Length: 201
Image (cartoon, rainbow, N blue to C red; front, side, top):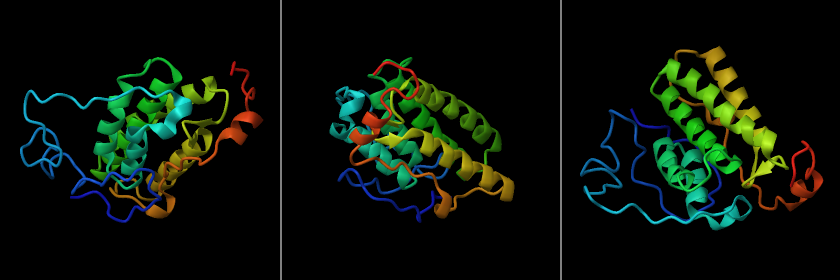
């Protein structure tokens, strides 16, 4: 089984995609197997990453590439890309919770793709917990370029429809897939909603 090839979205980063989408049990582990698309021999140094504040998200190629990977069905690869950034954050703060939520959204898609219903249900709950935290603690609805309430609504709608219509079927319907759409200019949203939820800017 391979991840769906029909997902399509605008690219945010010029980095090329890996030659395959990793699905556990179906192709070589990307970093641990010598045939993996991103194999790192034992003892190899971890890639050097730099923390980027949330308002400077456009300057983070890892964040942008993670969005591209997620949008095109490379869910495991998106997890790995975002996790490196997550490790640099305050994991209990909005940015850490935001990245963890996105990571778990991707993992939820992967679980559905391989037909693990229990994993889907668990990851839906936990991803929503993380993202709701950010919504409740961010002074604006757009966080790191993503309209978070809109994304959460589209994610819930996708799974409500998919599991109602085909609860046991693995796979995805690209027409309703909850893409990560990063805002080209979020300044207007921030001005309009700067004190919308009572949080300090």
